[in-house]
Length: 437
Ligand code: GLY
Image 1 (cartoon, rainbow, N blue to C red):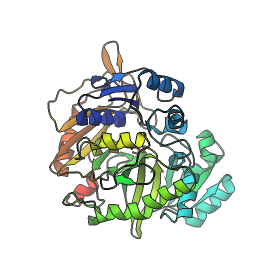
Image 2 (cartoon, protein in one colour):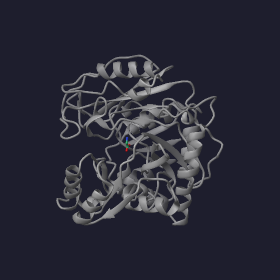
Image 3 (cartoon, rainbow, N blue to C red):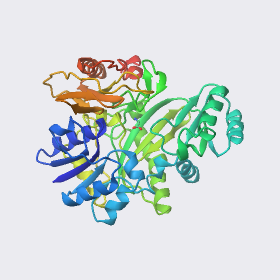
Image 4 (cartoon, rainbow, N blue to C red):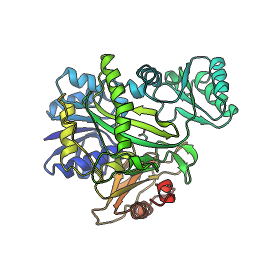
């Protein structure tokens, strides 16, 4: 079996690790991959945005499937182009990826399909957006409709912050076309879960839920990032989301029933079936689960916490390949988290998320443990050394029999990665641990 993994972050490294674990003899090609992936895959210098280059690589290597990590190539039509050439591809078409790439599309679809989500209105002028923000009152959420590299959502605690966000998107065009339409959305209270669902467009198979930590600082302080760490399995303190006896929790089944199933049905009815990985960002509010956002691909860093805990050896690759080939998947498949927890701690570069410093020489820890994983993200070789090349540099994941143990070892591994300005949050999974999980 030969797979082409598109992307070069911690998520793609974790996917490569999982494919190799499930199929030791798999041939993995990564485009562009990263130095960590290079130990288990052949990395080819074709960028994730180079659609013609990726297609030509997939064809010349005659891969069994293209596995797309990031959203940008999906938005740019990589899956459509693969399908047109008969290349199996894991990831939705451009039209189906709109669940992530157009928050206006996703909100309209959810409203039409009766999927619970925050109330929102769509605006192209500053005046109407400001008026809508005042109708909701602070706090209020301002979202650029298009893809904005994870920076397009502002939780405004005051009207001044809301006005500033609206003007930056609609007047100053800080996100270009992606911010030409702005959603003003009600602020929802509760705890958020990232629930990943594998789907062939009809059947949905969930992976154990994770919880991301989006703020840069401990105790969820400071600016938003792409994610500073995650843990899995997560139940957000709601026992109906807790895995017991390897059985799908009732809370997860409820989310499948009221969110996933109607969303997939509405996509089919619009002629744009969603096939791949549907990332449901779900807020467990006092009135029940509601959608915060959909993404059209695996989350990062949640993937680095989810993939190390799932049991069902061999099954993730099998189900992903079935979806890539356009086959139906087995509805009774259950990926349970077994009896372990994973904590994934992101090691970031000085200045992240605003202006991350790059080019710092990295010293890697030596460790010999099946319970720890160092997934590369922003690393690159230079003059025989490994140097930083992005804001999120590594994800240090550890698994353990308890969440506390997993957190302790994840933190320890993160602290052993050395480069000037390295920092990480020491409190990933703090909410669950504060509850005594
Ligand atoms: N961790 C959030 C995301 O992948 O979008």
